[in-house]
Length: 125
Ligand SMILES: [Zn+2]
Image 1 (tube, protein in one colour):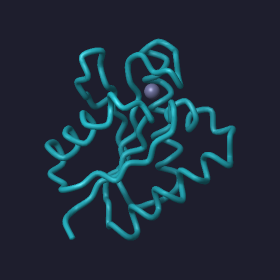
Image 2: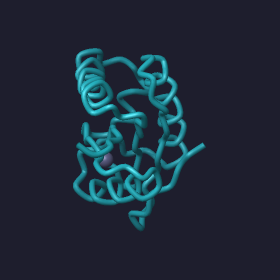
Image 3: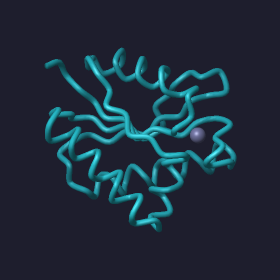
């Protein structure tokens, strides 16, 4: 079947291939299950839209439980139409989003990513 990781990514078409390629190369998985929302780092950090958050959680759980994913990445990126705030604010949101997803007790490592204005992917601490 191959090995899987999970990405909670933005809907933006510019960040799909960079995130897939980065996660495959850095973490040595074959496939990246993609869960997309516009500005998911903001949605998870605010933790207010429970219908959307439950929908994200349901999809993440399928990836973790059925595809045995042991890594969940949460993505923020430059020029995000769904989350048009500056990079530092997005980084803070992504850190808060990581903490929320960690609280779901998935048994997977959760990592925040930032996609730069050059569409390069970086881990955020
Ligand atoms: Zn975006």
